[in-house]
Structures are given as C-alpha cells and as structure tokens.
Length: 200
Image 1 (cartoon, helix red, strand yellow):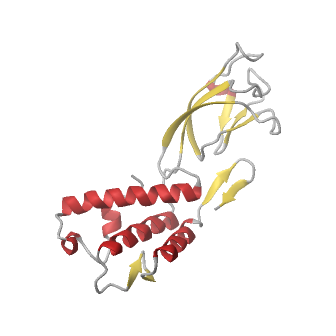
Image 2 (cartoon, rainbow, N blue to C red):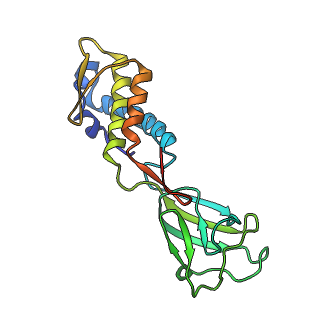
Image 3 (cartoon, one colour):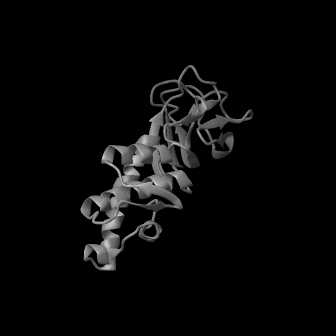
C-alpha cells in the first residue's frame, strides 16, 4: 500500500470516534479507501505507486535504436532475467552483464553477445521490477484528498474546510475534488523512453 493509515489520519480533521468505529475498524476502512484512491492515481499517471514485478515477452520496435529495448512498465527498478528465444531469431542469447538497466529500457553494451535486440514478434522475455520506491509529495496529497472526500461523503456535519499537508482546502463537489487531486498528482513526471519524461 503506497500510504499507511497513520499517514492519512494525521491529515484528517476527524478520527475513528467521529464514525463510531474502533481504531482497528477505522484503519481497515482507510486501507480500502487508500487502495481505491491509489488505483485512481495510478491510472492518471500510468505508473505503479509501489514496486511490482512484471514478466512480458517483447520485441524491439523497429524504429528505436538497435541496442535499446524499451520496457512497457516504468520506471524500471531492477531486472531479474532476460532471455531471447534463439529458436525463433538468429544470434545468441544475452547474459546479465551484456546490458545496462535504465529507467525506461535495457541497453546492450558494446561488447555484448549481440549487437541488436531482435525485432521479431515476442522473442525477448523480460522479468523486471517497476514502479515507484518513494511516493512524491504531490501524489501523497492527491491520495489524501481523495480519501478525505470519500470520508466527507459519509459525514460532513460542520466541516467546510481544513488543511492537507499544510495547505488550506475547502470541501467541494466530487468533480472539483477529482480535478484538484489530479492537479496535485501532475507534479510527478512519469519516465518515458520516447520523450525522457511524460507529463501527465
């Protein structure tokens, strides 16, 4: 989970008592709301907010440099394995010391067993870890804003404004809350092989 309940409760103007819940039950609800909000933010940013493992069989797009293999899920944290189906393509397989791991792609070293990644369809299988190891402040703020809006929908008696991470906010209709949360998150630039960084 990208944020723990205590990271959210410290930013809330109410606690478990306001909902007539035990702290354990309130934290359990918060975990559910955090997960929903985080999933929404991940969709906006096209990036996992936590490290995740992926395994995909790929090919090098013919329009990119021969020595680069862009990976579809970024930022790349580490690569566990790479194998080339040498029954389908010519040339040898690769070893871990044949390539560099970059944030968006794999790059063959000049002295690698191969001088190009194959473009043949589904010939390179890669297992790698991708996603964020640390959540940017704007992304945290977006998640907290969405969780608070969800809690406000349950009980908003007497609450018209407060603060998130030191910034004053007013409670607004859901579409405005979503727009502001999206604005909070857009300070993060997702890495893109094709453009260095893709602004959301």
